[in-house]
Length: 202
Image 1 (spheres, one colour):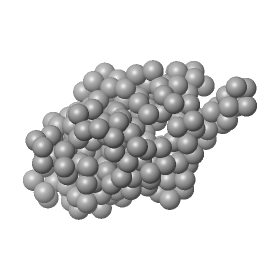
Image 2 (cartoon, one colour):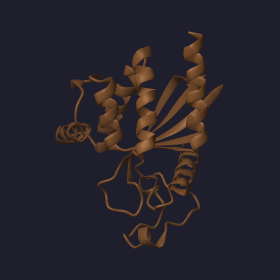
Image 3 (cartoon, rainbow, N blue to C red):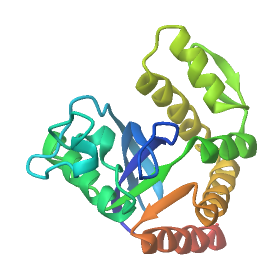
Image 4 (cartoon, rainbow, N blue to C red):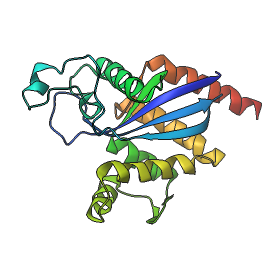
């Protein structure tokens, strides 16, 4: 499998738009033979596409650039994922091999499966991620920072081999439900095949 770079997009479906949701927070996750070697946080902020023009319905909201926050504006999620990759590459210089889009529903399912997880400064959480994010925002965190602290806690928990296997299993379930989207889809199959072989070897 070798070295791969994955763009993880955490979306908020509660913001009205034709597509799956607004990008609250993004991460570049580096994998080496299926193991996480590095996690880089990407705050969508003012990151915009260098050349792509926002679709008319997005322009109508008063936006003149296609920002990462709105990369998944349209119903065409594959196109949105490509836009997101191009925005991130242009703004950070980092090229990614695949995109994983995660909704709060999927995060809750993963939390229920592998939790409780330890969030720095907050202690252990295992339940409602939306509620957790609200509480964090009340404490003065931006939504991006709150999502970052939660995702880091989840990814740290997967250093435990059993939790990692459970996480991968839950990702497959959520992918089937459409709450986690992997683009291209064959990247997930390739990853799972590799993890499967690795488990047989151990």
